[in-house]
Length: 539
Image: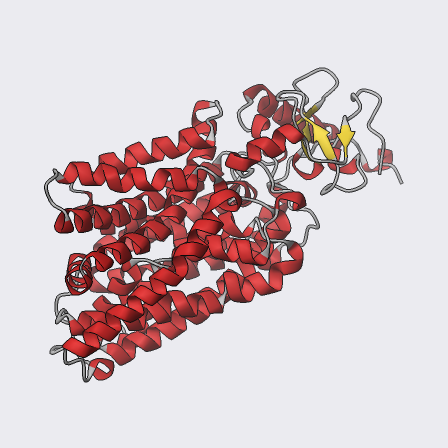
């Protein structure tokens, strides 16, 4: 530990949580801060919160749709490959997230620079809201089909409003308990659907089902199936925003079970088998649709089917709205230089989702997701390379210590645009191969330039609070702007104020004078070092 310089005011240090911060965290979940060890979740709590993503009509329909194109066997091979790939990625990324406590937005600052990172929360917010639109629309149509009597726009509003209160309390306050309660209902409900379908319909041959004609996919059927699942790589970004709450000592369990292969065995393989069987029983093998699956379940089970559909969609929507709102909070602060509360961010997302539901959004939803999927695949590849290559003991993510843009930002944007163009103009080959090709290109380019970027992205500055405390994860330092205390790992010195007092991460990201002063300090340092001759350098 080194004492601050004579021109720096002493830090106000404590070793217990600021009670005001803890109170805010009950709803804010440290959305714009690093998650301290004291706010980490148990294995059970975190797994229950994350399990909201295991349920969704989307997974049933995806597997059934692929099976109608390439057959059941090739679909299941592709699903097993997806479980393996996503399991490995989830293990690696969840471990890193637990070690750093960072959100997608904060990790992206390290990857792409202080300004270049803003696209990441924008993409993730939009993607999560698109999924919320999809899931909420299914709930609304199920209610309308069963009850009727009201304009569909009213049911849209009901579907959205039912979800918003469930995500305002964060993953520790409500999401884990809510999803733990509904998880058995989801699996039991689907098993009952399968049992009732088996009793009423002839489902022999569903495991060996093949389409009547084989389309030209520019890839073997099993590889096509695998590539389709790669289009859902956004789950890796979701993983970051959830896994940051994991305890470091639970990293192995969470990497294997909560976010790893065990989760995907249930999410992709379990749901996939059930989806293929239900679609086959419903006679939808040639024209699978979400509405067809939902209507079959409701018709088969009546009111209980409606409850099952609601449980299915409401559970996964808690994750969609949670990720959308937390990233909206970060995005709002950076765009408008003003903090918005978590409740406010949830309401903003709810309004946008409802507005999208009133349009013909589903007609262009999948194209939009494909475009965003290129950016997401590129982001995941770059993130993976960074995790593998990162050597620094403490990841640098603070706004005032990073360049505005890194070469990684241009690699990300360039490879993503290539993926979009390949998807749009590459014909059937582009539709099938755009995601894996984008992933490979961005990962390769980032790996080749990693060492250069690692050096150039860091600003040369002095007076680091990390060097002024004994333990950066246990020491709390008071911010001179908001007067709250946060763990030292996220704190910085504010050179725009006399004495360079400490400033927290959230305040630093909306403070332009702080940012300008940090850049000026870096430039002075670089010029000073350049003017020093080798003979004058200290030995």
